[in-house]
Image (cartoon, rainbow over all chains, first blue to last red; front, side):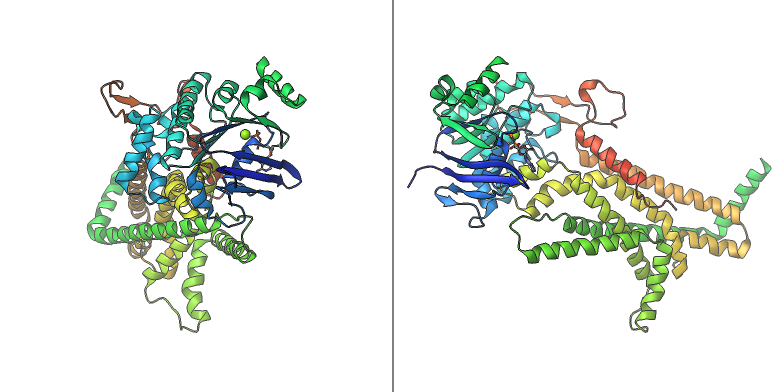
Length: 246
Length: 299
Ligand SMILES: Nc1ncnc2c1ncn2[C@@H]1O[C@H](COP(=O)(O)OP(=O)(O)O)[C@@H](O)[C@H]1O
Ligand SMILES: [Mg+2]
């Protein structure tokens, strides 16, 4: 029996004939940050979407606390409430205020009372520094602010693990820092996170495990200190070299 | 100038005798248009929602078959009622139902028949508008909702429909205005509305032009009021264009009202930084498409 919170086992995903993920296998342990790196098109988003069942894997399994979530054994909505997701494009609800964004899921899905939900939302909005903006609509705030609200929205569901899909890739450079700072804070507090990112410094500093993907396959994974300084595979070296040039 | 003052006099004479008749006619027109547009919107919403229930790969074939059947039925309904003139639909239903059922089923009140026909007609147009409104919402909105565990129904009612309905408000207004005018064809089933009143009155006194002038002014007054109200409702739905900072402690920056220029149309002159939002552009595009494509009332 492993103590992993999330186990991905031999997971494959095809869109028609296009095999996007092949035999993906890795674990996420409680309190750890796991980073997934790799060039765009390598299947990182698809992997996250399979993990929280926005896509159905073609084969393989995803275990949450040792229990399979594939094949209708688990109610996908209940499962997703425990697995938060932060998207590259924020996906805040455009028709709701910042506060309402963080409250609606708690009330509808977790059936919390309005007071309880608002108090909990405020706790996390304060934490991401967005408490003064609770009355604003998403269209009225900057990208960095939107992403911080999206993180608060996910946190307000009190998830056991948070998935991030390139949370800073859609941001102007000057806004990347504020989001990474929030994420570093979460990591320091022991939040379990699975982060797809191109921010190598972040991956190196906070990850317990770094997973390198290329063409739908995991080529290499390991501790960041080792993987970044002495990659075993030529593919990893090429990717990192190209990345450091920029 | 003489003819103009003659017209005024004639209109005065007409109104002196028939003002109540005109007013009653206008009342019927308005009531029919309001009720039928409301029911039509409900029909359209239901059809639009049923039409956009997604299949999931794991669904049973029974569910898939049922969803396909529902979509086919709605498709037929929309095509038939959009593709035939309402005046014919009125005849078909009002006289056809008793004919086919040997008078077992017939309309005891012409009101019931008129409301039914106009509602069904409006519903056919609204079904398409709602479907378009729903699929024009960024899929990211649905994913955001799913990702926090909301089910299809919760996603629809909390996230998608409020945005879709806001986007199709102009089309709801369009349908109402068209209904105000086009209910005039209900004379065919002896429904007496604003235009039927005109036909009756000029049949007695041959004052075609003065009466038509009254009609024109009457219709315009109603439709202009409707447009105005609609704009107001749309502004209400958009909420304030500014938001207040909420002061949580003494250290946060000074509270104040921050205004964002997210109003007006995307064609307004604006600095590049605040171009039309994607949302706005989509709404305009949707409106244009429906206007060029299958707008009602191009008769
Ligand atoms: N819904 C889909 N249908 C077909 N192909 C898809 C779909 N989603 C992703 N793909 C393909 O899967 C591959 C991996 O995409 P993605 O997971 O987004 O990569 P990454 O996030 O690493 O950039 C790409 O080639 C993409 O075209
Ligand atoms: Mg991606």
